[in-house]
Amino acid sequence: MIRTVQATRYALPLREGGSLPGLVEADDLGFYVVKFRGAGQGPLALVAELVAGEIGRRLGLAVPELVFVEVDPALGRNDPDAEIRHLLKASVGLNLGLDYLPGSIMFDREAGDTASAEVASMAIWFDAFVQNVDRTARNPNLLVWHRSLHFIDQGAALYFHHNWQSAASKAESPFPEVAKHLLLPWASAIPAAAAKAKSLLDTDALREILALVPDEWIESGERSAQERRNDYLEYLTRRLSASANFEEEAIRSHDRLL
Ligand SMILES: Nc1ncnc2c1ncn2[C@@H]1O[C@H](COP(=O)(O)OP(=O)(O)O)[C@@H](O)[C@H]1O
Ligand SMILES: [Mg+2]
Image (cartoon, rainbow, N blue to C red; front, side, top):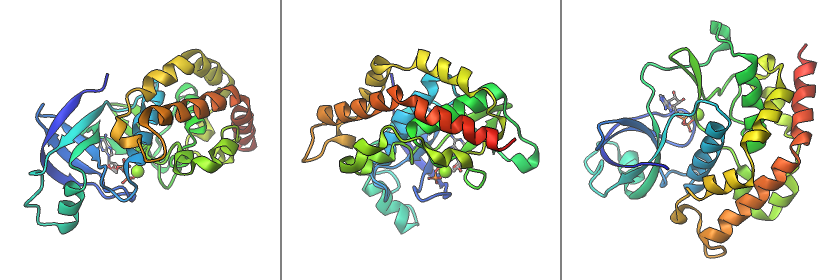
């Protein structure tokens, strides 16, 4: 279940990548980092954040709680920044929020941050499965908070959904981009992580996660929301059955570092 909260205050922009997330206070008095539907990358970035994020959680990785954030037309109407006013106006309705982790800091290997073999190996499996290229030393999207690693910014995952025509050919791909994954050096237990991942994730689990996606984020003239959910399910089920391809690639990439 994903909770729905009402945005009550746009507090601060968090410009890092291109998605213009903002720190928002909500009616439950919580603070959330919100990915806006009206941002340049469109609603599919929110779909990726939600679907990949919940897959990560299923795998036992720490992903901040995800909530739907309802934006009404009054939010930020008087913000001095025109770009923010436009963004909020284009985002009236449902958006996606991540629980804000106060005092968290970005993972930095140079500063001595490390990961356990268990978490690093599962992270490798996770990002290879959802095809997320945004977990590199330059762009970690990994927060250290209360001494554990928290996975944020899954918005670039599932990139096949930007082009369904060519999607079929990518479901079984080995994901060579894993070579640049910032946790690869610690990922010495990929076979164990893979076995665990496949015990936690199956077609039913994927179907449950896809059922969380709001219709208005995925329906198009071409496909109804339910047809689209089935497209995702088919793709991800195929990727799961071909997981040996990306598991072998990840193990080879890790061994090359030794
Ligand atoms: N849940 C969170 N708690 C604390 N800070 C966060 C959280 N989510 C994002 N941030 C901060 O906001 C920045 C931008 O968020 P991110 O999701 O990476 O979007 P993008 O890279 O598209 O701008 C992050 O690099 C991080 O510093
Ligand atoms: Mg980011």
